Image 1 (tube, rainbow, N blue to C red):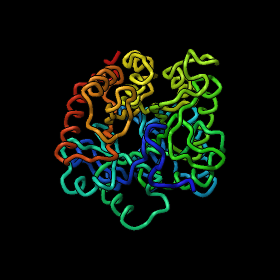
Image 2 (image 1 turned 30 degrees about the horizontal axis):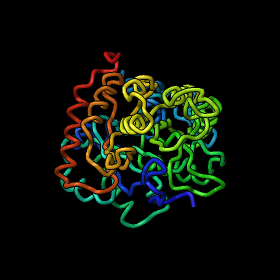
Image 3 (image 1 turned 45 degrees about the horizontal axis):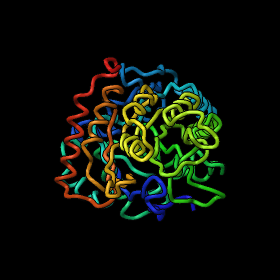
Image 4 (image 1 turned 120 degrees about the vertical axis):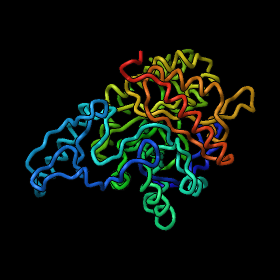
Length: 390
């Protein structure tokens, strides 16, 4: 099946083990903003404005203005089809880049990946720095009982952002229409402003490999991924962001000294994808660091070459350095000083985009985890505005 909650692959082979459940929704300070049903978002019955909670028109959050106009309310199936067609055109033209979809709460500040082991502490004693939550839809779609109930409880208090595990954007298998329909319903239900997945493949001949495997850094592969991102955006009616992964093997064309010389490096590959697809980048700072250690390149130089003007969100996590010859992206260790420093370097260039802490296993005390969120919040607050970033 295409939906699953955990991976069984060996962590040294691919990106990481897949994480468990979680979810929520609310404002920047984690406790001060209004729920989506707030009457201040309502308009006269005779018009539909781009600020309506039910509208999916984009809002430029930097200026606070919407890209749409108030107009007479369209009714009936024909009007719905025209609205969907307009949304697809906005997505393909890149109008939703670094914008929030109407009906979604703003996502700013520091977030945490919602995992079942953390849910009770998140709900009962949230740290003041916690501003939003990220969830893996595959852990909730077609599930009942306590998991969606916990997600609903979180979603009443914090904004939710979705981060997928199984789209296999670089794969050869066709994108599953059933998966996309179910995912579209889920993303709409939680009000995520964008959906992200990985620059990888993870399905072959219909079999989920339960891992995030690297792609060759070639123009052909970049074009293939970009086309699939466009199709996914059309199906979801949402902006997409793609994430750079950690990798431990070199497929053909991935390294310059391979028999088929690489056409580009990872940063150029990411740029080729996001520019052709008109999508955003989810920049995983820890993955850049891990890859730099395992493959011998300068992390800051590679990060600076990334399409930083397209970054909509940043991930940070811990990694395992117990093997001197191999660094593993585990999401099960405390954040290292080098990752904090690389995050600061990134934020100096992106401006204050939302930062997410991923912790999937070997959970520390809640006080220790809250301390990491506070440290990340302090770094994020020092970031220059987008206009001042180089």
